Every structure is written in C-alpha cells, then in structure tokens.
Image (cartoon, rainbow, N blue to C red; front, side, top):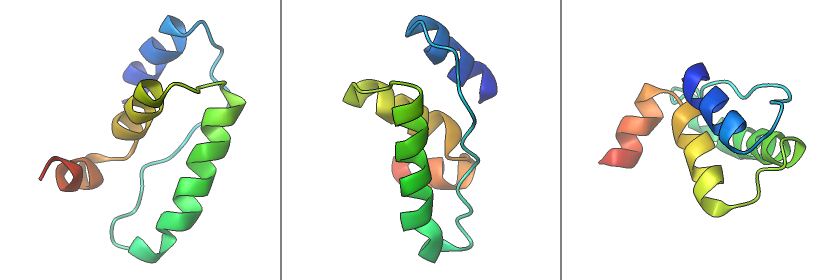
Length: 71
C-alpha cells in the first residue's frame, strides 16, 4: 500500500505530505470524516485528476473496503 502511494507520488512528481490511514469498516458512521480527511490529503498533495484520486483511495482504503468496492 505505501509502495503504491510512493509510486503514484513519484509519477506525479510530488513529495507526499502526511498519510491517510485505512478506513475502519467496523465503524461505517465515520465515513464522512474519513472522506473529508482524504480530500484534505489529496488537496495537500495536489492530486486533482479523478483517476489519481481513485488510485489513492483504492490503494489506501484497506482490504475490507477494497473488497466491498470490488463486489
């Protein structure tokens, strides 16, 4: 996961600022808070293209949420 973010950051020519932790699927009421933190992370790292935003989300969301998205 961190390696994927590093590759994305390198590809985009960015220094990665901060980090975004995995979403805790056992507490779905926290999704809005997680989404807000993700948006700030993307903004701080100047990630603006939708395809890159999706890559950051899916590479950092954690396996439980990734499996949910895949289904």
